[in-house]
Image (cartoon, rainbow, N blue to C red):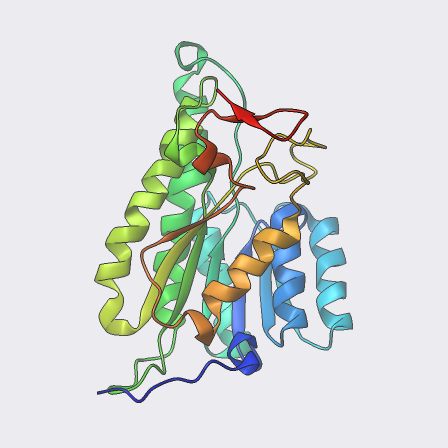
Amino acid sequence: MLSAMTADPDLFRLDGRVAVVTGAAQGIGEAIARAFAASGADVAICDRDASGLERVANAIDAAGRTATTGVLDVRDSDAVSEFAKAVQRAYGHIDTLINNAGGGFSAPLLDISPNGERALVDENFTSALACIRAFVPLMPDPVPGSRRGGGSVINITSIEAHRAAPGFAVYAAMKAALANVTKSLALELADRHVRVNCIAPDMIPTPGVGDLEIATPLPYAGHPDDVAAAALFLASPAAGFITGVTIHVDGGNLAASGWKRGADGTFAL
């Protein structure tokens, strides 16, 4: 039987750990990379945006941690494999993988070409699987009879994985697929002490979506740092018994399910 674990602020630290963050040149990925470095982790980051990646790497260095960068498209599985080799050479292992890269465009399903559909599938689902296959083998072996070893996979999905998304049907379907495969992987990788979880954001202003009007039960705006905080928790020892779940960072929008806050603070459908 494992010994009891006392809650301690140090459980939320990531000192000496190594994290990989995809799509890290801006927005949520940048916030996660910066937060992990501030919490003591070295961070390997990748993105197609070389200049943004360099800026984030400089911020990681300024926080006193090391950064390894890869300018690549995560839809290219060969490029992902080469990046994983570079990360292994730099650090020997990793502890956390954050599959953040993704994106979409608005169009009715009947107007999406086969090429457009394939791009959405690859960017939001297939790429995450490629990263999991490349990086999970770099996580430490489990230590029997303890919580040590293993690691954490965190998939950034979306509230759209849990509701209809007219104009974004394929994007939402792939986010739902990623949320579902997260549950299966949580079981498949449990013996390795690898925990697999999701974060589903909504109403988080990023360069990709611009500023957003507040439309959440909580009467204030979200921020990429809110997602980063959830990722820090899931990656930390404090979440050592949490796997196969989704944390919704959405100001209460999923819970609202159509209820809207009025100017007087009351709710109505």
